[in-house]
Length: 343
Image (cartoon, rainbow, N blue to C red; front, side, top):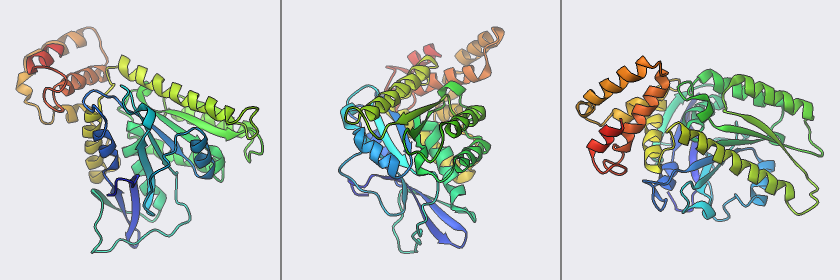
């Protein structure tokens, strides 16, 4: 893959009612390319839309000026330059909710396919995109920004979120750790009324697919150049910080190396079964000699259960403690004994 190719996820036809969903390896590459992936804790901002989204990203200086995407790509990703060396760098990803009335490329036997390819049988392209977003995007996103003006109807957006909700892949992720959703609409000349956008917000809140749902209105005629876009950008960054704070409180703020490992596990899970939930604890202990932890874990379980600690919190704590010394071994703790002590 070219260094200038920003493509993350792509879709191609492999025959009648058969699609190939490709992961190009781009997400894991931008994680690896950070200055200190063992300690930096990236935050993923995902922007959904088309022309309205493209214009807003340029005005917010989030759009990468050098780069390209393959014709079959439906999601791209890059690191936001000014944040690259920060403790919490920002990843900017963008894509579309569904098909774009374009003819998908046909995969052929001699074609060199990207890093990971998954074959799905379905009569509808959007069903494959749903799997990709719910399994490979939502669990790793801090903020989802959807530009309402870029879609034909409010009903179309609602139906998409309904399908995501039914896939239920975030059921084992505490509600406050799920991504924040920001719905962006225009103040003048919008094809949707504020009432309609408000109803969409209420519907999204009822689904509980996102930690929070807010609405932002962009003015087409700013009193100062790009004033409303600056305000939107500040709001997006603020929501990302809010997500990071929640993850920090829950001991769920993972390094780039941890995220890369969890992403690969989620990718393999999507290949086996799109509806399977990602077992974070299983990923944490997969390559660890559990005998090192048995005595301490028994003590922890006895104490936490005696105090009525919720099982989800126990699992999150144990998984985090194991991950401290697991990926890569010793990167966060100087010894296995210290990791055991933390458990």
